[in-house]
Image 1 (cartoon, rainbow, N blue to C red):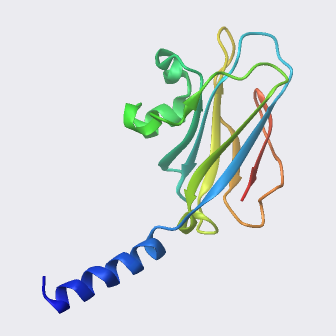
Image 2: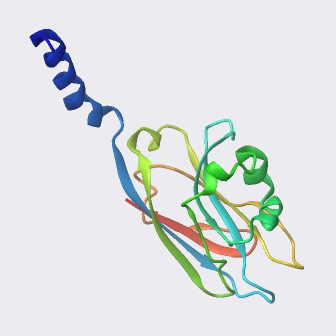
Length: 156
C-alpha cells in the first residue's frame, strides 16, 4: 500500500465516527390502568411529513399481532429486519416499559417525531397513541397518550 492510500484510509477511519454519531435514548412508557392482557407497543420515528423512518422498540413477542400496530406495520412493512433485536415482552396494565436504544444525533431537533402505536387483545387498537417531537428540549418531559399509554418520556 502506498503512502497516499494509507493516508486516505487513516483519514476515513478518523472521519467515520463523526458521520454516524449516535447517543443512547432511554424511553419510558407508563401504561394506564385498563382491563385486559398485556399491551403490544411499537415505538418508532417518523419524519416531518409523518412517514415511517425507524423502529426503536416493539413490545410483544408474537409477530402475528403486530398488524394491529397499524401505522407502524404499514410504515415498516412488518419486515423482520425492522424489529429483530429491538423487541421484548408485552406491557401490562399500570406497568411501565423502560428501554434504552441508540439514536442517530442527526434525528434530534431535525423535525422528527417519536410515535407509539398500541393494541390490546379484545381491545381497541391505537395508531399514534403518543406523538411527540424528537427535540433536545423535549427530553425528560412526558408526552400524554390517548389510548393505553398514559405517557411516554425520553431521556438522552
